[in-house]
Image 1 (tube, rainbow, N blue to C red):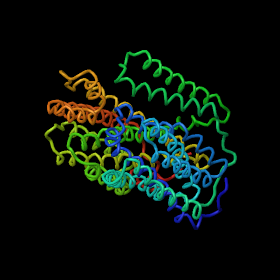
Image 2 (tube, rainbow, N blue to C red; image 1 turned 90 degrees about the vertical axis):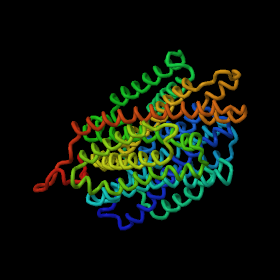
Image 3 (cartoon, rainbow, N blue to C red; image 1 turned 45 degrees about the vertical axis):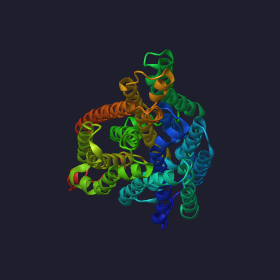
Length: 512
C-alpha cells in the first residue's frame, strides 16, 4: 500500500477535503426530506413514490459501497473519490432539470452511485494518513462533518423552496461538490492497495438486485397488501438473492464481502448498533417533515427551522461522546444513548393532533442526544477493529450495512405509516377518484380537502397521520430498547494498556 513512512504532514489539511466531501452527503440527505411534501404537491407523488425518491439513492448507495471501496483500493482512493463527487454533481444537475417523479428517482439513483464512491473512500483514507493515537479524533471530525450537513439541509432547503422551484434543492449541491473536488485534488495524497480483491460484478449485481427487490416489496405492500403475489414474490426474490450473495462470498478465494470481518464480534455488534440507529433516524427523517408541514401547517423553511432541535441534540452529543467514552467505555455510551433514544421515541409516541410544536421540540431534542451518544461510539469502535490494509473494503462493508439499515428504515417505517394512514382516513362520501387520491398521502388528502372545501377530511387526515407517526415511534422505541439490552449484554470495551482501567479507554487501537 502506498503510504509514507511517518505521518503525512498534509494530513490535517487533507482532512479538510474529507470534511467537504462528507458535508455534501449529509447536506443532501436532509434537504430532500424537507422537500418531499412540496414535491408531493407539485408532482403529485404518492407516499410510495416519495419513499422511492429517498430510497433510490440509498439502495444504489448500499449496493455499490463495497465495490467502490475496492476500486479505490486498487486504482487510487483520491482518483475514485473525485470521480464519485463528479458523478454526484451530474446527478444533481439532472435532478434540477427534471419534471416528473420517475426522472427524480433516476437522478437520485445517479447521485447514489457518486455517494457510494465518496462515503467509504473518505473514511478509508484516514487509517493511511493518521497514526493510531490521532485516528479517533480524525474519524470523529469526519463523522461530525457528516452530521453538520444534516441541520444545514432543512434550513437551506426550506429557504430555497420558499423562494425558488423545487429543483433548486438539487442545484445547490453544485458549488458544494465543486469545493469538495477542488479540496481533494489539491490536498489529498493518493493512496492505494493494488493487492485488494478485484471487483466481483456478479456479487455487485446480487447485492443491487437483492436489496432492490426487498425494498420494492416493502414499499408496495401497503398498496397491494402483504399477501399480494407480487409483494411476496419480490420479498422472496430479495431473500434468495442476498442468500446467494452470502454463499458466493463464503466460497470465494478472495471475497469482495469479507466474512471474516462479519465473524469478528466487536465489529459485528458495533456495526449492528450503528445500523439500528440509522434505521430509526432515516425512518424518522422521512415521517417528520410531513407532520411539521402538512399537519402543523408550517412552510418549507419553517419546517427546516423546527427540525433543528433534533440536529442540535445530535451535534452536541456527537461532540461530547468522546469524554463519555473515556469515562464509561464505548459499551456504556452506546447503551446509554440507545436508552435515551428509546425514552425519546416513547415520549414522542404520545403526540396528538393538539400537542403543538413545543412538545415536539422536547422529544426531538432528546432524540438527537440519544442518536449522538449511540452512533459516534458505535462507529468509532467498529472502525477501530479494521486492519489498515483492508481500509477500503472494510469501511465499505460497515457503510453498506448502515445504508441497508437506512433504506429498510425508510421503506418499512414509511410503509407502516402509509398503511395506517390509509386505513384510518375517513373518506366516506367522497367520489372514488378523490378517495383514492386522498389516501396517497397526508399532503394529497389536504389538497383534496381544499379543493372540495371538506374540513372533515382535513381533520381526519391530520388525525390519521399523527396516529401513524405515533405507531412508527413506538416501533422505534421497542427496537432501541432491544438493541440497548443486547449492547449492554454482548458488547465489550477494548482491552486497556497495562495499568489503565478498561472503561477509561477510547476505542482507538486496531483489533486485527
